[in-house]
Image 1: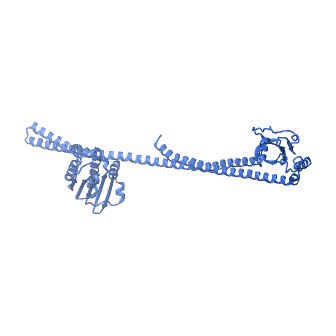
Image 2 (image 1 turned 90 degrees about the vertical axis):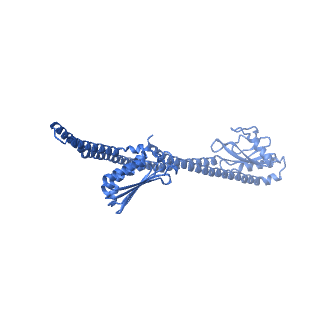
Length: 458
């Protein structure tokens, strides 16, 4: 994976994960809250049904109380009157009262007329519940609720039913009535369906908000990445062109040095040798003097070659270190330009990385070239030190400084020096005024091969 793709992934993946996590958390909390509300609603509905059964049972007991209280255990006439009253006490299509004796024989059932007179003690519902037996047991215990499956008259299908049974102990009868719970479950099922639809709608809303947001972020990152790539390509082209310009400038300088210096000296040597040869051939006097002049000119050519070689790569930098190389540099500079240069340097004794030594040397070399060309200075000071374990080189001149910031920003030499320092994580600051210019190059501790001790940095 390329770096830009890694950056895009690092930017978008956490956002997507955060959106998914927030969506899941909101959905989970909403679902739990809604389900708790639905469960509370269902419990309240069931409690209302139970309260209704108690009220209906009390109503039936009140209706038969006058007869039952005055009747004896074997009062058949009173029993018939009670049967008639209970058969008539229905409330709605699915609401009725039923009576079984303690042996399980049905006494009253206004909806299922085939049940009276038969024993249903061993009747089981589809779930295996012994319905009549359990209702009779609730009645013997003093009354209670029991839930089971029973045929719903209005629908003709089995449905959940809860009944309240109470005992008429004098006659050994179980009196009961019940309500069907399918309407309650239908309402809770509808609530669950509404919950599911709400969750889906919420999730869809979050998706409709999150997806465009992610796409927007992705598009912005892609645009930023494209912009950065274009800027990087532009800077790379500028850097490449700068390198080419620097190479061409150096080649031009060397060609000029060769043409104006060594080439002219060698031509003089050739003329001196030709003159000496002609004098020797003709027997004229002055041949030794001509040869001497040629030898002197040849020595000058050798010095010029050494100077060019030193400018390209000073041997002292590798053999003797940075301080010795700077000494040779300023000596040649002062001899060539007449500008007084002083050096204050600590001896690092090859503790710096070779690349760092070269970078500092090139900065000093470029700075002296700029001073010679533009500063009109008469004195230059170079101070090389190690404050706080770092390397610092300060070059100060008493020249005329820069005329404007544009000269400073557009100068190829200054940019080269800044880039040399930035390569090692260092920095370069330039302070200029009409009374002179100070260049401060600073490199971090990482350029040391080993950390210097006080005895060494001296």
